[in-house]
Image 1 (cartoon, rainbow, N blue to C red):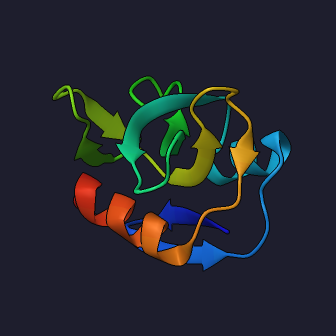
Image 2: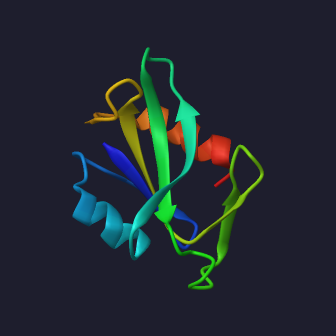
Length: 103
């Protein structure tokens, strides 16, 4: 499962997205916007945005953990923090990440 945030609206999706699907959601090349911990060992939620959100003048979405502004639509996926591989997320993990970033 993964989540998308488009125009401030959160949607949950079954499966795991491909890189092409992730880029389609954010409208271009992706970059890491933030990381959110989960209760599972070595699993965190990666929050991704368009790497050129500022240049494209996308709307402000949230401020990440470091206080940097993040612009445009988002995609959230679970990842193994050791290998970097995408893994299945639970809806509860995604909901916690969405709450953590303030959407």
